[in-house]
Length: 136
Ligand SMILES: CC(C)(COP(=O)(O)OP(=O)(O)OC[C@H]1O[C@@H](n2cnc3c(N)ncnc32)[C@H](O)[C@@H]1OP(=O)(O)O)[C@@H](O)C(=O)NCCC(=O)NCCS
Image (cartoon, helix red, strand yellow):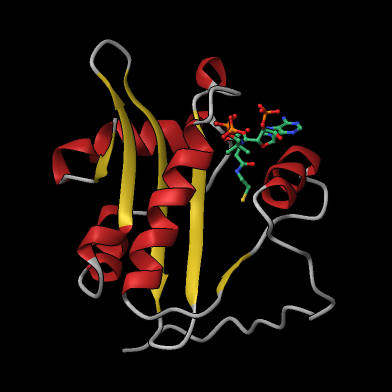
């Protein structure tokens, strides 16, 4: 079942991110992120296996973004990630996002194949980033 994330899912979701090599978003950071879109974090929940997949979406008022997609290795190739992303796309579209972006590491061949299958095309933009000094 694909449903909106609840805070009681956080420990299992953090475990999922850790088990699949994704950065674990600290609870405080996730709470701040979800303030702007509490319905944009989705989980795949199984009555026996618990949380088998998760994805986080954000909308900056102009673009939708997809982050932290992960599915438990033993539950892959059953369409769970496609279902999570499909529902997130519906929710982002309903908010008015005309385009959805995401970042994938260039060596993540499986991830790139998955995104291509769903119609996400790589583009030549270069990501530029700056680490800001801590405040206070
Ligand atoms: C990428 C990932 C989320 C896919 O999850 P999944 O639930 O297995 O994906 P789905 O079953 O919905 O796959 C849909 C389609 O994507 C493609 N696909 C998915 N995984 C693939 C793989 N390992 N190799 C090639 N194609 C793949 C296939 O076309 C698949 O359809 P098919 O099974 O009918 O052939 C999962 O492998 C994962 O969690 N990987 C680690 C984290 C990660 O890389 N996240 C995404 C990067 S941002």
